Image 1 (cartoon, chains in turn purple, brown):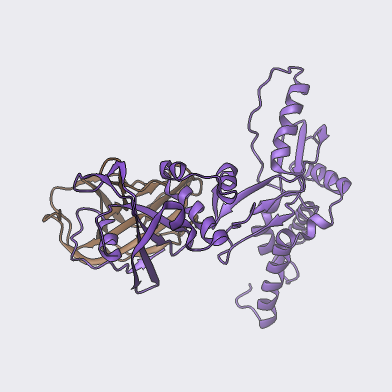
Image 2 (cartoon, rainbow over the protein chains, first blue to last red; image 1 turned 90 degrees about the vertical axis):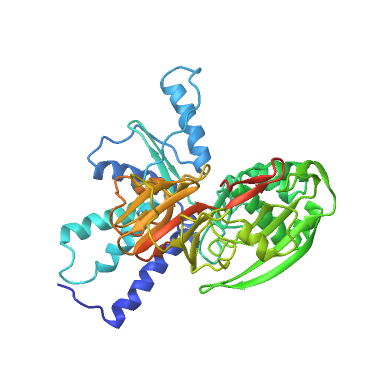
Length: 323
Length: 127
């Protein structure tokens, strides 16, 4: 029984980890792409699972392309052109989702007495399958559609998918998805933001704070810290830095000079200004502009307003832990 | 509008828009409920959920938790919870916010409010 690791073992943990990360994030497997090898790997995956081999294997350039291929195939296979598009489930075997357990067991492969010879053989067989560069796949009885690896992945310091200037992940056919600090953002919101065609009225009508948080973060990164306030027609009223036990937080209070007939303050006064308190999430670093009552002059007092009514105002605005 | 039934210690925690304020003791007239998510996203399929030995209570304006041990609050995809109960302290794969530990004690949980300028009052943040 293995009870401790040597320094060489510990060094090899990093080596195995980095090898697996490079397969995806350094595009190592995409560069080695070979269609015939990938098709053979799909057949071997079905054989390994004791399933009949699929009649057809069609390689897709992206997950979106895989869905289109599958829907077209479904209509042809059933000889019914009226069949509507549907979303086909992606499998979770024989692709990048296996990297976690494969890398774990690959570490033990060269060690004596840990894995049986049969386990090593089976493990190597699966490694050979995923090493043909299958990102994901749609696995059906008659058809399998393996998807090629992405050709661009951008992440933040926390390894979340993140890019403020374009898609955070793209595939060879140009399909991409947008993420801000790990949060998915629809392309329509990204395009409007980056092209500066988003209007203040559209922004104010967004009820979901995560969508607004993504937009705020793009504006801040791409157009500078003053842009968001200018976009909202607001000026800074108050700024305060709070030192919590685990982190430091900067709160900024903004308010418009302009008054709006549709807006009211917490006292019921109509024709009020609009105001926001800017907070930065300690986990994601997304910037939130939380709509607030325009009567505040102090960011700290305003922050206390954004707690439950049941919490007394004399309780300090300090987070013992926050994430 | 502080509630005299709730005696706060002044210690507060947060995980995203979920705010957790420690109470000195369990308030009277609270209604026990089955364990459930403390909050769930409308959009991303994520949830805030507490794991460990605790009793959950429903109160006006939020939730009260009576943690019998140090519990762990996760922010994860609901799909990661399939087949798992919330009775054992466990860390799930993180969605956006890291897990936070709630030491044994009683807590009041609420969602960070935003101000709706159209209506002139506070409403819970939506994500």
